[in-house]
Image (cartoon, rainbow, N blue to C red):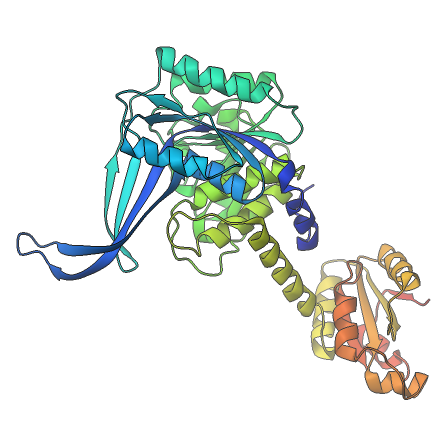
Length: 453
């Protein structure tokens, strides 16, 4: 498959998200937020004085990936490190409130829990405090992480099972853990998504899919991925480094570029309607990609769903999650917009047919009242579409139907009939005609194939 499916088909995949089981191994972060008002500067230094009015904490890093998986309807096993400290207790409490996340986090004496505290004045972040260690896991600690990881891989049948390696360069995915984890997953035939942080992508050799952002791609490949052609080259270089099946380059406002082995690159424009905060959007994208693949989606479809989910995430402030219901709503909205775009007047229909013909496509034409759609109509339209590359359906207007069938018809008005017709997958364009026959419209559009029931 080279292109993602239509939104109604993507929605069907979303409904299978509960089949996904994802093992998440990586750097766990506690994200804290302190929000308030900063109405004056400190007399001690030229800095704002923040009066806090609200505090809250949420799961970040690999834990945010797991949280997004759970919110989308999948199940996650979370493996990583936390300290035996106040932040660690806060993290455990947040995980305990998520029944779809299996907590396999190791508590390490003397190691601080990674915590990022963001201070906000209104909607603006004025300071971030990072409390962390980047000490690499090694020795007995690395062995303990790998033991939990392998046990999680072996705990269920491979169907619906995916691994996410969430690297935030905080020490969990050290040399002693990363390579053996990739080898263990490969030995079991498990799909591995690696969200990289290292500048050398060869460290992730064996990962099925690499998901670097534009900056990470540029750092690792020395290729600026700002433009589509450069993103393709950078993705190909990254793919060569990992030896995997695909690289998905996330490009912020420019969307995604999917580079696959022996297939044409695929560019997906962003679906974000507004951007409030990009914090955690990468985690949301990776989580959606993992859940979609775990639900049986082909990679282009999984990428399209990840793109739609990330677009919803960036419209929310702070580290945010997206539910399956929200994804379904945005898919159905786009389907409605696409349906409306299929309905055209004479001038727009003529321009569209001319564009199809210039592209070498064979244009078909069918017409009728189509007042009450029945199986015979569906068969007619399907067979008509099979005889051409693009199918135009011309509908009698309400006045034309009344002249043909009497004053009690149509049962549905022309707007309703056009909307229903445009929603059918065999139909590429819908137009209306007011005459008793479509002869004038046929002469205008000059279709290559004329289909009559």
